[in-house]
Image (cartoon, rainbow, N blue to C red; front, side, top):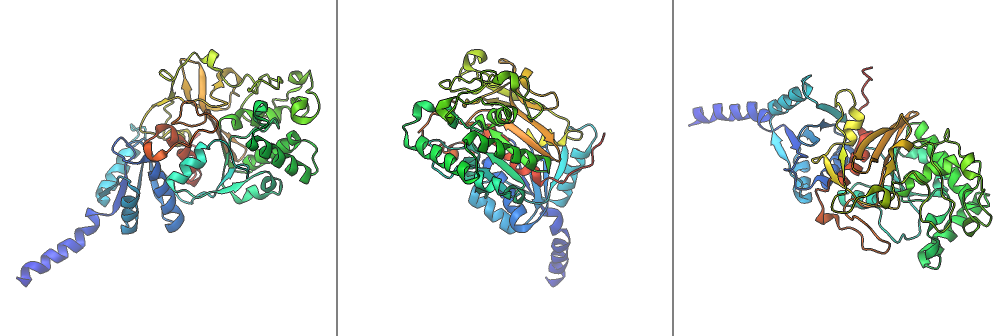
Length: 420
């Protein structure tokens, strides 16, 4: 009996690594919870400092990591689909990805990014999609606002999300809500911070903040914005030498020649746009494609992700990883961007051909990057003020929310040398 057992034990010891040495987290339709899968990748990077392979265009952008029982236990707890594969199987996958004929690539995720959300301290009347999905995916983040940015604290972070902020100093152009407690509190807070930093107008404060965020990107930071934090950011930069806010917002009249004084050399994403100075119009400029211009309804509002070369364009490929190529649309105070107003160096990652608009754009900027994503909530077509926050437990496979999480992991990727 001993003679039979000894060879068997030796065989099992020698072959065990071949049977179970990698965990594959599939990100195709077989994944039960795409959103929490990003959180597990973040957790492994943060708590264990172990490299993860992000398999671009392989089964929806899957993750592969070494086998660890703690990882498996946590995936079970979080309801994440996974497969334990052999080292040989892992090598076969990497060989398949490396083939010149395959539009795939393997990117090493190495160092977890430290994340900040630019958001007011006062309670908001609506939820923010990015903080919502980070909370659901269990990705930690810090809240920063004007004080922290004015004090130079952005350098502590690798990735910054701009909450749905109006950088023009017009308080979202929500004058019709001026008697609401949340509006009064937000306005009071902004005015107090402006005075604290020796500024007489909120628009001056927001311009200073916008410039510091631009410096952050130039120095190597990653900035992500949604909804009206996209266009109002560039509008603030372009209007640095003129006044676009009427007296109900800042105490004096807008410059009637403001549009002729816009400086598009200062902007990051947009050019040749016109601002709307009508204080009662809840719209900032012609950058945003309006409902009557779009000609779309909830039933036919979809946008399509562009397909990039994984080996030659790894960054756009990372940002568009998904299990779906056609994404259902969603609205916001800023929903979509007119293509003819986007700077030529900016990459369009997703578009709606039916409306001739861009929904998702990205560009290197100095040593850093920025990404703008139109709309408010990927799982609520027309999210209204005072609505209940979206319950992401009902949308664990949201393709629209996945695009946000791609941006959070993107700074963790090991940088490859340019091939051109």
